[in-house]
Image 1: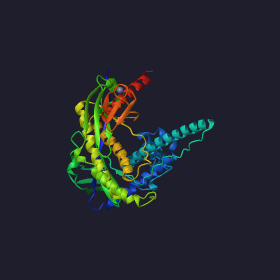
Image 2: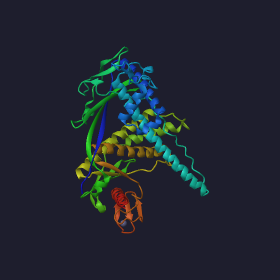
Image 3: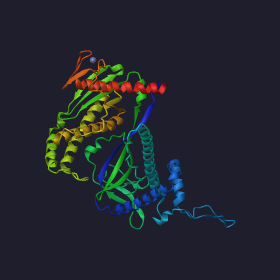
Image 4: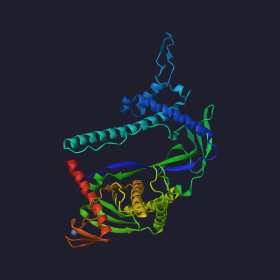
Length: 460
Ligand SMILES: [Zn+2]
């Protein structure tokens, strides 16, 4: 069975503040956004053509619509021919003598933004149609229609977009030096200036070895401060789920996350047919979360006196930020351990349970309710961090629906079980499980069941 290789790329960004007075950068950004906004408007006027455009054909079409070029003269007859003397949307009106390389970069960005919006918009339209069809059925059955109140995605604007510098617009980009040369508008002309940036922290550089390739830099503004963002890319090979399922001895690392008062993850290495090869508990003593619960208590105390909080107002901002920082740190440590374990055990897929949409408990209040909210947030965070860390090492993350994973007996598949804390008893085969290990094994088998189902659908 040939294993198809699927190359994917991972990205890392290093953000450094620009020191000194970036007045010229501010001016350039203004021009950049004005031109980007102009092109977004031109695309909006010609939306019917957008689906056919790619980066090259779109650039050609947009240049035809905006760039004025003088016609050439036939030397013999003196007749004028060619050129584009009267474009419908002349770019000269926005900015005279705009450099061509920058214009092309902006056009590419505008096309990308518009196309990403367009695909979201089409998704929204399809969803709306589905809902309408469903409502017609409901009305025919004598039921109330469900209102569709989702807003369509907004067409993009140039408002908060960062500037990307392509080849030729920048020189001497390196993490070792604290300067970079960028081509900017100095008030009179486009020229290179030297921009000073803060040094890269050692810890950020640690994650970048030679296998990471540096790509183009960009600059973005946040609350009046400018940052230079250096992006790195790395290509890695992963096996698609379907191919891995068909490979010789597929094994998945199934994880049961228990994120509550005491955070723990139980991992099981599950093979085809539900074989359990290995089990391991991961509890991170260094990332004690009791601190978080003390903070949540403080927040609960502060919020309880406020009554109904007006929309858009976020009380306890600083405390929440602290909670998030502690939890994020935990999610980073845990996800690293999970990926290391997958590598050690030779699993090419890590399986998690996907959580249902969060519904706050009606019967719980104060910090208990917030703990559940935080648990949900942390769960998603661990999955997100694991996914990108795994990708770099050629491992994929799978999410399976959380149906009966904690109630089903992993040995006989019976749902006739009773759970008491960490103990799960099966009434069918009268075995006693550790409920977390049982849930992890079920999560792993669920992946194999799903892939088998998909395979059958494909071959049927
Ligand atoms: Zn059983």
